[in-house]
Length: 501
Length: 114
Image (cartoon, rainbow over all chains, first blue to last red; front, top):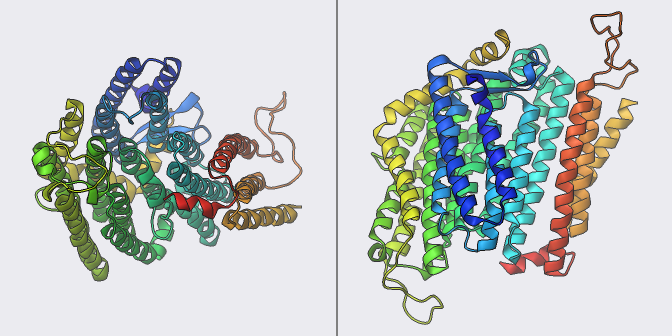
């Protein structure tokens, strides 16, 4: 029975989505259903995390097919951590959208079933132990995100949607081609089995699928030079949704990148690590420079997503146990802080109807509590102690120094300062300066009231950022455990293949 | 035999990418369609093209005997085709909606909405 819990992160959102589709006309029902379902999801993820911590990797062979023929679900520390973080995020977002949603009632009705399907794809990608199954979950996730993206007929939305859909279909094609080549070479697509057999084949045959798969995941995670779709499409979405997309979807790409490069292609990794570092540095620089010139808060944050993907890829490029652990720490910290910043951006959208920094201001007086929440997340993102971002960057950059990549370390530090600069830009424009006067279209309000649900969700995420800083040691020990599995694929292979059923 | 398949898949890939890079919405659609066909051919080829029996164990036997066709790649391609079909159906609708909203086939015209 406990074994079946492993599949719950997929079944739960699927069931919820079906229920939400059936009762699509009742908004209240869907709200409660979503809240309960995401709450359950969080509980299940925590339970799974606890199980993985105490009794090692959890494997489920679906339909009791003998390994390596059936499809299996594997939960290791890394996937458990990602599951917990992502379900915390969707839980908070579902509280956040309680009263505000995505503005329009009728759209909100169609929105709930879709976010559950989206989340099913996300958590499925985290727990699958089979590359083809990963492709299927990716497609579920993509399909839901395509529909969410084109729900509204606005011209800018459609423009963003077409770029997003095209690039993602391209990435799926590359992914699938890589799977075909891998299967042709090795006769299996099970991750553990692939890892075991990969050394039997000449590495020249593996380079092609490895590169194709990296391009595919690179498009999804938005690394340089494959990031163009991201700032073009994300800012067109309503804030609550862009929080979901920006916080989760790109990180699924990063997760998949980590998974394949550490477990499957690790022999190639040593040859290509300098390329990873170069790409990571370029991603960091381009992202942060893109962000500096922006005055639209969602665009600015979208460029920051790219810049921070660079840090994660840097951890993968350095490829030591500690750098991977630090990168996983960074992923978790970034998901939480970035989502919260988008939610704060959503408050501007909700109260003033715009996210243009030039047109808003005076929020430090209007909503003092909001400015505290913003400061925590923004300084956390920039890496000011004692918040989570400081430890994430400190651990990562320290390891980069130890591995003697001094230029990369310098770039990472410089990008950190620029991140702080653009966070302070938001602070100065939206909170500190007086609300712009004159002939602007947006009426300046003197008092604002936010729904309590928005405060609750943002406070949870802000306190998570603080807690991650205070409890950095505990969390780093968890991510070290996760990196241990990624660093020694034998653990993964043994857990999956050695004790069947 | 497999060489012609490889060639075909390569041509489809190249055509697909070329079409995606064009400015026309319709060509974009065809580009995506071609790409998915090219990929399906690669998966089709992955198990090798050779004469073999279906992978069914005979009544007298307890195991599969040597020349049998790999059924898994067929299962993979079937899944890939179905998913690809759904994606393409969605994409066609999206393209149609874009066409209706901007009233032209030229992708560059969309950008004026920014």
